Length: 422
Image (cartoon, rainbow, N blue to C red; front, side, top):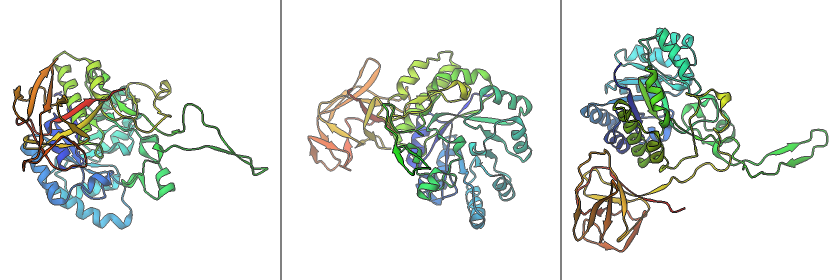
């Protein structure tokens, strides 16, 4: 079995470039409302999507197209045209959830492999066999299935590829089969427009049907985010997963998340995978780096634990929290400037997050600023914040869309960050 694939989200073209630059072997992305992430689907036009596929293939990497929504009758004709159009771009696979769409995709584009979405909720080799017989090449496992169950699926179907989520948001409902968003706002989860109602705070009431009395249930110190699931983080278990020898791809959730999230999660899991094969796995190192991203608290989910064994998968206090670090700027693709994402000040040291550990950076000091290394990490300080047209600032904030000149060229999409004081 070859080395496991690292699969990262590509919410738009820039995030796709970041994911590939930070170490992904493959990315997944969608265009149009047939994807389960409508917002990210709108980030691509058909023209830019075709360009993205060509860019990915030029890097020697793969791109999988998400067509994992559940269409209604009125959408089928449009879906046919959509499949025809994206199949002509020669992506590496179509990610599909509905059996009818599998048949349709095979009819229109028999040369494109089919990957079965986690939304199909495969939990056993019986279900896996049905889809395998339909021609599915890979199954993206349900979030609730265990590594032991996946081993049994692999035993029964050794040629079937298995993909598992290792990081990202988790739905409080069973594999995303949720109607709360539909009921409250008319936004249908399984058609890609979930409003994330489970993340909201709620006030509970008790109603006495005999008297008609309505009592407000008093809030405890645990809070009111009663449906808010923590984020999945299996970085500490990458060794266990790869030791099993049955998983073909590790998948990171997050097409609607920030560029920094895409970069950090991809780089960290890339390092965990590479360290595993180099016999240098260090779980604490990966956990520390992932803590720098915004999250809802972390859980290791159900892949390595049975559901009844877990009682820490919810965050009842709040729906989002800051990570340990704040992103302050992002370096441009050409590496010559950076764009402020928070606040940039003079004579403050900002850590550089490089796409790869071996990225070429040199120590330098000039009138613009300096770049130096301290305790294994690279830093940058500005002596002047200057735009390309020569305008200077003492301090700038994220509302300023002027790119700031760097002291020296840096790797594309390097991030500048500092630690949040707490």
